[in-house]
Image (cartoon, rainbow, N blue to C red):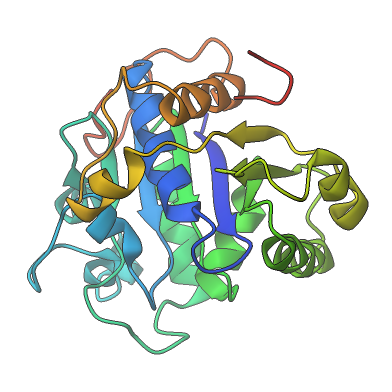
Length: 260
């Protein structure tokens, strides 16, 4: 078997895709699932900053390119970062790289190996969908499109959704609204502009920005936005999954709309 693969992409810069991807990985691990987070945004590499990981010597996905022809679980094990919350992360490189540095075949091989070693694989995608992002989309069981509730974000989400659908994505594209302020637009506007009802809403939480500035995740028992993330994770997690049932490179075990 392989992991359930959840791809996360933002409608525009600052929509909150990095927040959602990192905290989903933590929420899956909190539930006892073997979770892996892979950052495929090779230009920005925001996941490392969100997890408080820095330095030019940090392992990244580029470490796997030279051994692509003989890629093994041991290679992957050495490239993964273990987070204290119980999930593993494969980071983007500390410096931006040229598009195409990660060939499609290499990206597919890495993702397939990761998916064989975990219960849940969270793929953080760039908004400009390159070969690595396309490989993740091909493998994804769910695609979460993260958007704000302002007009610019929603029209950005519509453009991104159109791009994803032109890539023959099935009807598993789901919209997650991040921290709406309650002013102006509402869920009906989302359905009017995007043609779909939002899967989930993550409430505004004043503790998020300070935590991000420190390179920290919200604590497991944090309320408001973390409660909403946990509910999304519970709906996406594989039914009947058990920690430790996967074999692979030492991956640690680790508010849906309408719910209250």
